[in-house]
Amino acid sequence: MSNERIERLAELARRVEQIDAEWGLLDARRRDRSPTLVQLRSLFDWVQDKERDFHERFPEVAARTTLPEAPDPDDLLGDSVDARAWQSLVARRSLLEEEWARILGSWEALAAEWQELLDHRRAALEAVDQGLARVRERLLERERAISCAIAGVFKGGTEPLSPAAAAPLFSSPTDRPAASPTPAAPVAPEVPAAVPAPVAPAASGSGLRVSPRVALGVPINLRVEHRLLQGDTENVSLTGVFVRTSASMPLGREVDLVFDLPERKGLQALGKVVWHRPDDAGGGVGLHFTELPDDTRKALETFVRRTGRALRDEGTW
Image 1: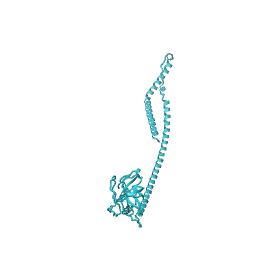
Image 2: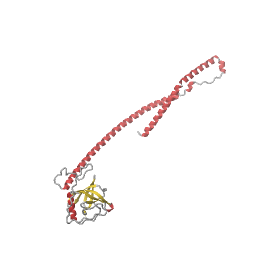
Image 3: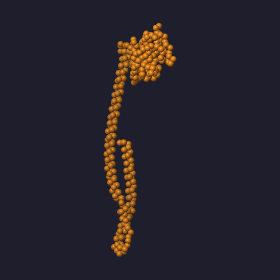
Image 4: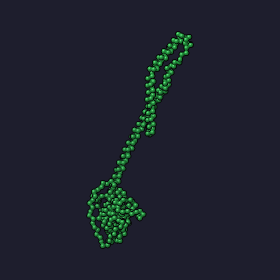
C-alpha cells in the first residue's frame, strides 16, 4: 500500500472519529435537557386538562374567549429522524470496519508471503556468492599452479621445483604478502673489451644509466597488480627496458616482467616505472630494473655485448 493511500485513510479515520466525538457531545446535551422536557410535558398535559374542564363548565365563556396557542413539546423533538439516520450510519460503519479488518488481514498475509520470498531470495543470493567465492579461489589456485609451472620452464629445470622454489610467476591479488627476500649484494658485471663505453645520461633524466642501451623488439608480458598486460620492447640495457604500450601505469608502480632474448626465452625481472613517453611520440614507459635474477642479467650482458653499437639516450632508467 502506498504512503499516499495510508495517509488518506488515516485522515478519513480522524474525520470519522471527530464526527463521532461531536455527535456524542450533542447526544449528551440532548440527555441533559430531558428533565426540562419532562416538566414541559407535565405542564402541557395540565394545561390541556384545564382547557377541557374550562370548555365543559363554561361553554358560553369558552366560546367567546380566544386562547393563545400552546405548542406541543413533542414538536420540538425533531431529532428523531436524525437519530434514525445516525443509527443507519453507525450500522454502515460497522460493516465498513468488518470489511477493513478483512482487508488488513489480506495485507498481513501478503506481507508475510512477501517476507518469506524475500528471505528465500536473500538466502539464494548468499549461496550464489559463496559458490562464486569458491570458484574464484579455485581459479586463483589454478592460476598460481600455472604460474609455478611457467616459472619452472623459464628456469630451465628438469626436476620438479621444491615448495620454496615454486613461487608463482605472478602473485594473485588475494595472496598474502610474502616476506621480502634479502636482496643479494649486486655483482659488478665483467665488461669484456668489446663492450662499448657507457653513454652519458640524458639531460632530461633524473637517474644515471650505467649500461648502454641497445635496440630490442620482442613481445613482453607485464603484470601490474592484478592485471596481465602485453607490450613490445623497443630497447633494453642492464638497468632497464623501454616498453611500447598504451596501458596506463603511474610513476613508481612496480611491474613483473617476462620477455625473450634471441638466445634465451622466458627471462624474468622486476621493474619500476620511472618515465613515460607520450602517445603522439609512440607511447610507452621506461622501466628501471629493481630485481634482476642472475640468469637474466647474464643473458642481457651477452646480448648487449653482441649487439654492439649503443643507442642515443631517450629517457633515463
